[in-house]
Amino acid sequence: MCGIVGYLGHRRALPVLLNGLKRLEYRGYDSAGIAVPTEDGLYIAKRAGTVAQLEALLAGVELPATSGIGHTRWATHGEPLDRNAHPHTDASGRIAIVHNGIIENYSTLKAKLREDGYTFRSDTDTEVLAVFIGALYEQYGDLELAVRTALSEVQGTFGIVILCADQPDTLIAARRGSPIVIGIGDGEYIVASDATAIVEYTRSVFYLTDDEMAIITREGCQTKTIDDIPTSVQLLELEFDLERIEKGGFPHFMLKEIYEQPQTFLDACRGRLLPHEGNVKLGGLRSVEPQLRRARRLILTGCGTSWHAALVGEYWIEELARLPVEVEYASEFRYRNPVLFPEDIVIAISQSGETADTLAAVREAKLRGATVLGIVNVVGSSIARETHAGVYIHAGPEIGVASTKAFTSQLAVLMLLALYLGRMRHLSAAQAQDIAAEIRRLPEKIQYILDHAEHIRQIARQYAQARNFLYLGRGVNFPIALEGALKLKEIAYIHAEGYPAAEMKHGPIALIDENMPVVVIAPRDELYEKVLSNIEEIRARHGQIIAIANEGDTELPHVANHIITIPHTLPLLTPVLTVIPLQLLAYFIAVERGLNVDMPRNLAKSVTVE
Ligand code: F6R
Image (tube, rainbow, N blue to C red; front, side):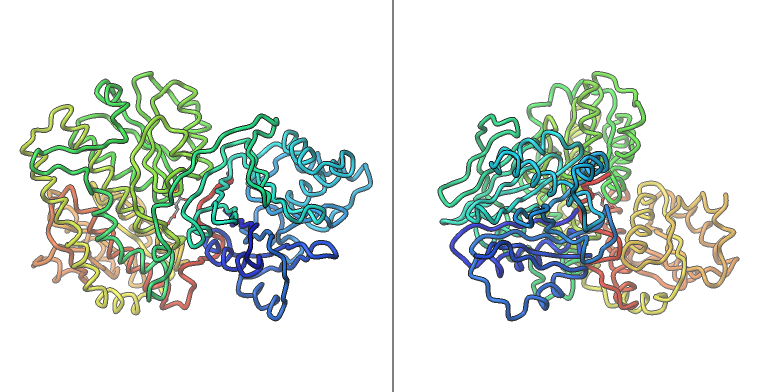
């Protein structure tokens, strides 16, 4: 949710920390701060606002320190105010901590510490943890022991990095439920909540596991559990390079990521699609092939955009594999006492691999004996590690808060999965070959839509001041209506609802008047005529119709106010194309409204709290 960075090495820490915070700002951007050691104790600068504002505060400040910690925040406990920004310190001001996650028993701890005479300056749970560690440090005189003792008493989730003025050449990091990744460079260590802050210094990293901590000094890095049992780490090579996390000439990450989709879609399929054999190779699922053959039901789970991908997957898997699929919000699944049979397969879909609800759903499903798989983007993330097996989508880092390229890559993997399961069952090689051949053509068709984005920008201009939008789609494009509406809500702050087109007359039709833009997804498929009837119903009430139609459609131009065309493809595959104009429409409307597309209000990438 928030971004953490820590540095210990031979460079000046301050620029490294600020640079890291800029890279991590997409994870939270309501306040930022740093702490570095000086001869007179810790130097701390923090404030509500952006990293650029923190940088302005630090303009002209020269600090020789070669270690330090930093944080960019997405508020959970306490408003985004200067005093609530991280780092937080203990009572002595000699220990500073940056924290992601939530300390659930913070009020009990706070009350106890108050009884012992401690006072607090912020409204945060993190300050309570800092004061608690400080109190134990005073008692034991041993920082590591104080940290371990405190962490074994706190409930909730944390990814933390601690710096103490008495040991300026040590960083202590720990995690429970909130990622911490440690980069090992040449004589330097970079600790962060995600690898984007690390990749320009080193590609060699390892992730802490839950209840694991790292004590990083100039002599080396030691890992152990918070119960003091030594652990060993698994070094990974980061797969992406700096270019993937820079805007590369685009005004926003979101636009860059929308334009990356021909490539990322291809990457998700690379080496997996065997069009000549009419088959699919998913190496990550080899170990669970017997379970997949036996499966009687799949449960797909995720949140937000990933949940929308799951809905598309439901249509595809049921159609091609004739296997019943249920789609559940992870947040509901985890608390619902779900009925699971031993032969059920649960598939968690998550870009970040860290979403708290999805991770909890994974754990719940495992506890109940299901085989649990992951469709994840971030390599080495919690969901990737905790599932029995899975498939990476290989979309590269997604920085834009609104998910775009991860969605189409999730779709790619879900389609491959549907073919894979289908070929294990009823799907003929010839049918699979036809679909596989068309999947290979999708990247150039996505590119075609991107090449015609200017027309979508023109439409966006006309509707940028609308107060409400309705998105309609049928069949496999119904989830795309939901996704289009979500994109508009989150970055343009316009109320929007997605509906199955036929449901409109059961209520939402009452909303339609000349001020209501209605985006109708109407590719030429078996439901096309039905969608045309829905469009007539909107027309009769003077709604403004923006239709997503196939090239060469001769009927829609007569009934819609605007047409956005997409190339022809197999009806089942249309979601991969229909979603692209909706991403662009939301993007252009948000830009037209003067909004910060990459940092939409109240949102942050990766929701690691409940
Ligand atoms: C929407 C968006 C969110 C995420 C959701 C799940 O654009 O980004 O709705 O899709 O928070 O995140 P992941 O996929 O990381 O589990």
